[in-house]
Length: 239
Image (tube, rainbow, N blue to C red; front, side):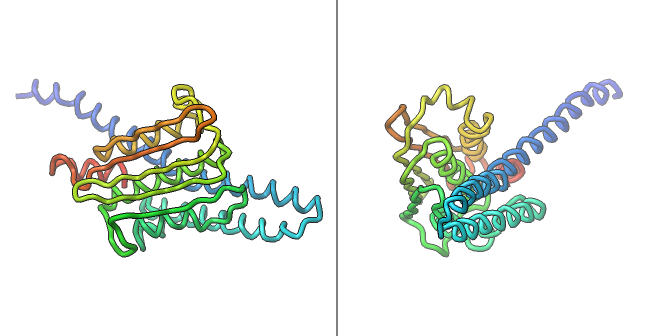
């Protein structure tokens, strides 16, 4: 009876190591997609404010107020990360309101973000893991459109259907070569991170872009896990 027990130990050890590594990757994604994005935007806003101040522009104060809001959001995200790895606005009010917050951020960098929804109202909620996955994908896509694509306009569209939900992000930026972008955007966290989030939720991400033509990102996620016993695994991986 001892031999089977001894044989099972390496497998158990390997499984525990795999769980720890998954947790590290999840934490890295949360830090990158949340506070890191907000702080990068704040740094960009500080640069703009400094330029405005040097010119004696009256807009410097407004730009600094926008930076202050970004830093406050980053602090809130850090606190939320510590409390349960979930942004406060998303936790309290749901995915529709959380997505609209992306459009409400000050357009310090000249990018206008619009958010549209179909099949969902402000008060409706999806599964917590689905909401978090959708919000982080949208947050990453909008950030990439601004920082890497130099987009003037970004459209975020959320559509809920009976069995799935689709998130569409379109921009009018400079576009990109997809194969190269997979390995260079945000040190590998950008496109691979979005795809991994969707995969962990049983969905997929489709990206259409060529240099000079803007970018279109579509994420489709099922509203129910393919197998009931997958629910706990999905919560651990994405929540």
